[in-house]
Length: 166
Image 1 (tube, one colour):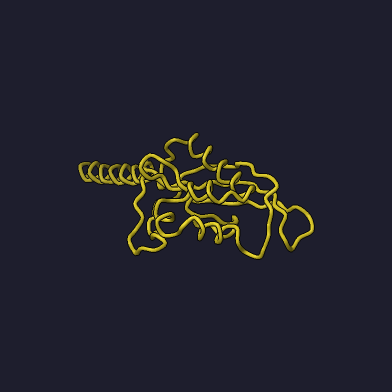
Image 2 (cartoon, rainbow, N blue to C red):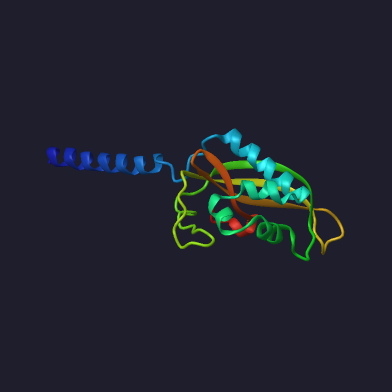
């Protein structure tokens, strides 16, 4: 009986070690060059507040720039009839995106999967003047940033409730 118990305990111990290494291996992407990402996020929101299409276009992923011209980007980002105005922006959090949550991102004009080294979620606090509201409103905003060939690029964003799975 004792050898059986030792083997049984050995199996249980090995199982516990196997489970713990699964959880130690991060379920999120790393965030390399954290300071660079924070700086680029600041550039992005400054460009959005100032409606600077050239700067925001330069911060988008290479596939986005390949798929859309600067004029198309300007129209998509600033050309709508709805005029919301960003009053202020503050960074709340930067963390690695959950592995698998952005794995199937496809290029905007290609069917090929995007290739990236890391993905991050940047959560911000925006104070915006929404066109339909007469006073500034605070919004939690979540952006996806991809790390490609040593640089962070903006991939997309939305309000907190739109991005709950990230």
